Length: 367
Ligand SMILES: Nc1ncnc2c1ncn2[C@@H]1O[C@H](COP(=O)(O)OP(=O)(O)OP(=O)(O)O)[C@@H](O)[C@H]1O
Ligand SMILES: [Mg+2]
Image 1 (cartoon, helix red, strand yellow):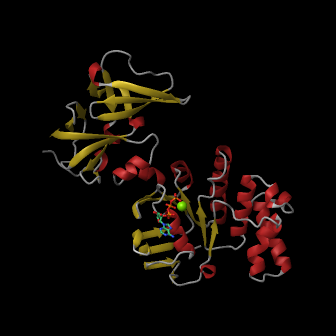
Image 2 (tube, rainbow, N blue to C red):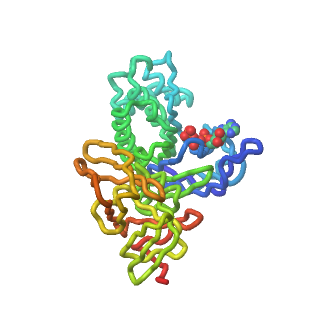
Image 3 (cartoon, rainbow, N blue to C red):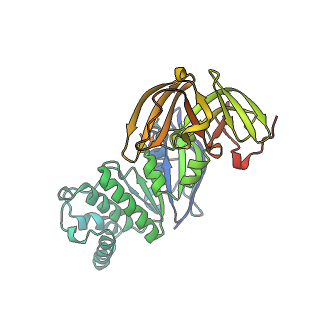
């Protein structure tokens, strides 16, 4: 299986540039997820790798081979789409056999390969059915089988699970992860669903506006987002962003004065160029001593109870924040609201939205 390398890859439609010089290494034998909001260029990038779109500028390599001008059928990629694209009048067997038949593979070998693949995907009992007599998940597996049977160097998936209901999506997610491990395949999986990305990926590529924002393992990205976009995009509900006016640093401690005048005391220094503090709902606790909000300076906007936990939405002078509480724990009904912020879990961003050193890799000295 091969790695996929893009160097300064650009895509233009006429005068409109939609991918702006992508530099990216997609690891061999791993599952890489391209994640980003609608319109950020995920499908375009995938289609460029498949050869369904040409590359306006830059280089694309699969393994060591420059494939910019190589015909899609010769790139060793197999693509699975959101809408499965099965042949409606052909049985599961024939749908799966199709790529091999096109290649002129002998009948006995086709028979063997289809049965082998159907076994892995648990499709053996369904080989004689037509696609319309299958469930969504079964159709999706047939589409995957048709990709697998070609023994491609790279599997490309464009939102393959988005037509499935929630339960089936979880099941298919596990199925794809299992298959990837079993086949040791290079897989590139496009989604705008962060849960899918976090649970499936060895490596996540976060995209926005035709740019790569960050590449990393799911937890690395959650723990160390490179910029404000990534910080806000990964995690649900989103990270809270608190803009501030000034900082007073002391040795291993700082006081951050928020817009509106409230102050946060932290057991760490704050980088000089920081302008915004970021903290996830799950890293704010009620009853801490970092930020005390007088009774007349906050209002409770509402709460969402999910069973095991609840999200409380609170309006402060500088904006809204979300707090995660274990189920059953409410916010104080009267008096001040005291919040704890885990200093190691607080993020800082400069005026351009770039993340600055965290407590653990702090380089900025005290002032
Ligand atoms: N044929 C085309 N001509 C002009 N612009 C296009 C064309 N195809 C795509 N685009 C534009 O390129 C950008 C990226 O589109 P793309 O389909 O790659 O987004 P995406 O990240 O896959 O989004 P989604 O999550 O909605 O599928 C969009 O702004 C889209 O409008
Ligand atoms: Mg798309």
